[in-house]
Image (cartoon, rainbow, N blue to C red):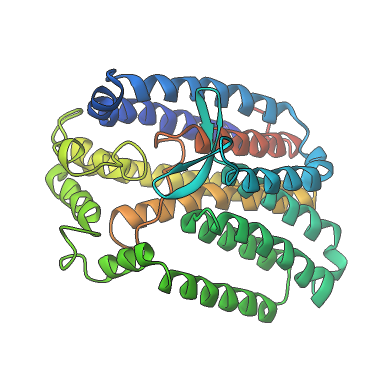
Length: 364
């Protein structure tokens, strides 16, 4: 009988394989025009994949109980890295946002580490304070203050997508831990109001919101990429136009190898691929929830639950953005989109989840 951890790894292998194929397909033209090498992005993705698999194996062998002792130091380091993105010659500004740190020829997004470290810290604290989790100070205010501080650092880059995702995962962890719903509603309402005010004073975000509400009106401006993505799905139909034959990736989808790669999957491979991909993420969620329920202690349960949401909610948001259900946000599709930071931390998440499964008796 297949163990849950084995099924989880099989899902990840399938998604990684599809990711390599689609990065090769979607990035060739951009690599040739920008770097003189049609395999430029594919080569970088393969390098990151090797690093990610190695890191994932290490995480798999690392006893998840020790993450409790690393929670605070890791969170502090993550916050320092989020500050360093604004330091000249260390941080890099890309597309108007300070989201990157450069190390030689590689660049990394500290928000990916911050997202992971915050989840670990929140799980550690709520597991530690499980007898007082309904108290206002120790159950709500202390973790909420830490969450708010980290989210402000991510939002300052600005990175609205990661901020929204991390906030949602953190609140859901607090919910399953037993924090009073009234407190969480206050936190969610306050956060949503603050985000709305910030968006209202950000011309670029307002343009994206208006394009989401009325894409036809902004079809040639802010909604151009969304309309192109929808056209990709329409052109692909049930069977797709054929691998490598996408027209949208050449002329209409500048982020076809990153945030909007799912649209090219729909165009080239059709519904016969997009629906199985969706089902794979649902299966990932099911495996993660089973690992969480079978975890041998409360910290493992919270951690498996939070990390599962970290991957699956990001996938759901990506699907929603590409299909026009959500306003445009810069979140890659885990395991499939080009991007080393997301891939590396996603494999760390898988490694931690497999380790929790192993401690629950789910040996591979």
